Image (cartoon, rainbow, N blue to C red):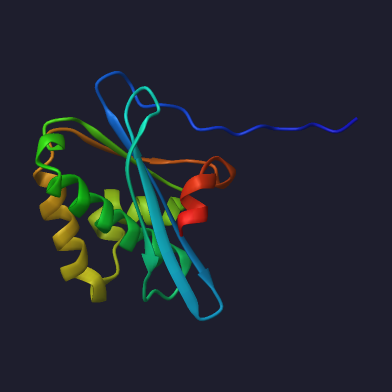
Length: 139
């Protein structure tokens, strides 16, 4: 008998928005993507593109910065709480805890921190890779 585990996306709490992001690196190509959804699961925005990154963790950090910039740019959303879900525990810790960050990227993280301070409420969550299907496709 085989155990099968199903992973699926879960909506944010009522009144919140959720941005699922993914960063992908294959050989010398890298990309990132993300999907913004409301508490009913309706997609409200997305992004996708090629980036310069050395490793999946950095690709997810770039995706997270793009997410914060894009969310703040949509002026109506700044007052609505935001959850960013990504697949990398390491990238999540870099965003949450300044002491884990790479010194060479301090300016980049400073820009992310500045954007996060403009949000009313904000959370970072780690999601299982298989639950991030659409975002992986964008990346």
